Length: 233
Image 1 (tube, rainbow, N blue to C red):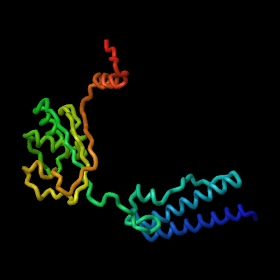
Image 2 (tube, helix red, strand yellow; image 1 turned 135 degrees about the vertical axis):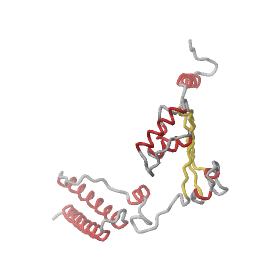
Image 3 (cartoon, helix red, strand yellow; image 1 turned 90 degrees about the vertical axis):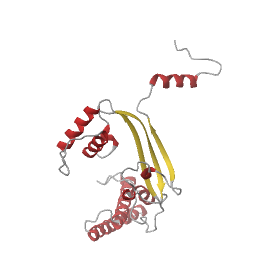
């Protein structure tokens, strides 16, 4: 038996051992989702299978039925957020120990209040929820009704009855999670105000309309050599 054959035999034994470890972890988890031990055993089985497959291909030009790629345990932990530790059992570092707060504002113009109220009333009839079938009487009530009938996000307001204007999304690290009950129903600024220890980490400006002619003109100006002007006739 050549050294290469011995290496193949050893690689196969690692696959068998890793498969047994994975099965034992699965049985111990008993259907529990996102179990750390199952994930660690899965990575070991995946990588053992990948190594065996590559050795078999190099030595004999043959392949296994396993279509797998090697997994970097540390990178996988960072992307998938495995439990309280890494695959090697060490505690994973968290670059954002604070709470992440996403705050979004988008403005709308209401072309027809009557049309908006009719749409909200239809949404209420189709989705009675708590059994409320009363008429929708205000714009604010209509907006909330449409959001509740949709997916709960501002995307539910992308409708012909509302003209979408500009908006902004702010991502911040905050020290204290939001508790809506600490603010009065009429307080429109408190829940969105950052405290002294909070920090904005990113911002996205949303523009409802972009004048393509102006953008093309700006690009043309930027590409013109100094001392010359673009011919826009």
